[in-house]
Image 1 (cartoon, rainbow, N blue to C red):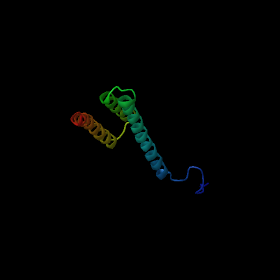
Image 2 (cartoon, rainbow, N blue to C red):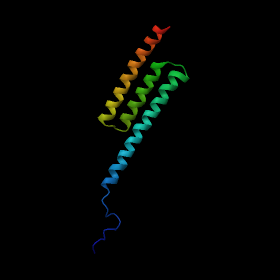
Image 3 (cartoon, rainbow, N blue to C red):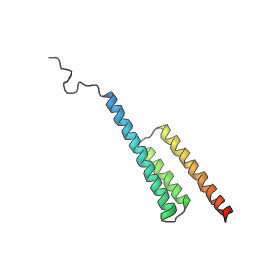
Image 4 (spheres, rainbow, N blue to C red):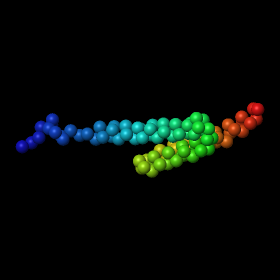
Length: 101
């Protein structure tokens, strides 16, 4: 007996699977960046440990999440670019603030 088009399991769900996969990946990206930012700002400003311990925590959280979720090379490129920008900022801002006083 042939199945009707509306029978259970007869629908092609590749588009839905792709959409859900993209949603999960974007959730990991946003969640990771949120945790990284909170760790950096908490260590640098709230606790007063300094910029560099916060930067190390930022890098550690990003690396752990990247390895844990087996993220793509685009994730790693974005992470490394963010790490470099924050490191340059951590060098430039103290230099500028020292010149202002």
